[in-house]
Amino acid sequence: MPAASCPARSAEAPHAVLVVGQGGLGDQSYNDLGTAGFLQGVRDIGVTGRIVETASVVSEGADILRQAAAAGFGLIVDLEYAHGAVIAEVAPQFARCRFVTLNQVVHGPNITSILFQEQEGSYLAGVLAAASLRDRALPGLDRHAGLGVIGGVRSAGIDKFIVGFIQGARSIDPKITIHVAYANSFGDPALGFEMARAMYRGGVGIIYAVAGTTGIGAIRAARDMNRYAIGVDQDEDGLAPGHVLTSMVKHTDLAVRNVVRSWHDGTLPDDGVIRMGLASGGIGLSDMRFTRAILPPDVLSDVARARSDILNDHVHVWDVTAQGYPDFYQ
Image 1 (spheres, one colour):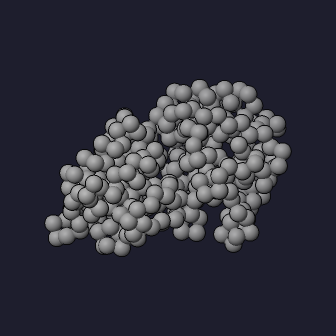
Image 2 (cartoon, one colour):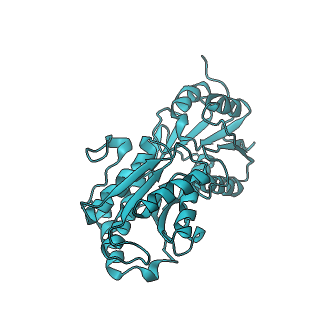
Image 3 (cartoon, helix red, strand yellow):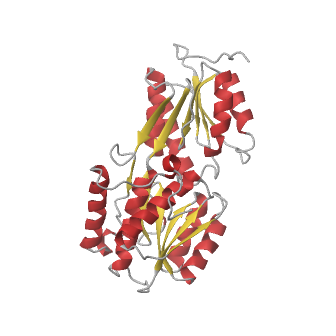
């Protein structure tokens, strides 16, 4: 099939479109951050931006992308992880359009991939959680409390967080108990609440919630049961002050804003990968403004040391998306 026409950058200022991923807007997390960065980016460069959101985003992926390209959008930023194969199929049909995917690598001359090193920030979150239990630093926790993780779905993109968290926690306590469960949903806070309650009742003291809006339910359960959670994607510390130890902040807003501006400037790499981790400021922990005062200096020192070790290549954090699954998590 010959490549279809799509406007290149020009004085006519072609439009840009953002495809919202599973969980939708209002997740106070990944989608909201990506959307904020997109809107700021199109304001910066003075073009029209359109947001596409649908509950059937996974099943309708090919139609969404084809319609956006055919409608004259010069830049299509897709937040949906499940669209990797769809982008690879559709992008060659619209060679003058630029497609951007996040959290995976899709090859093509008009495709740019943004990869976050979530495993690095998750490692730090695991260090913080395990060190807090080791030092019995947190009010309300049993001395034998374990750790929990609630993932949105079983996938390499989510397990990248989970494996990093486990590796970090076990760097502090190799024998620590870590319970992992999957919600199979990114948009069900009631389910996240019930899953977290069950974990807390079973002896878990701190839950790492990697599940979009579903994870917000876990944070509510932490507040209601006087336990603790760790947020993800954006700073969720304020959702339950004093009960969210920290958030593993993934600066999707910065990444999307930068990619919009680079597209406009003509500096996006062809068939390129943009990597964002601790070193670039794309990943990191929140400032713990509600919990820093209750954490012993030794815990914070452990986190600072772990960060330095990663940056100086003294610690390699396992990346499921690049290396497959480690022996300790199959």
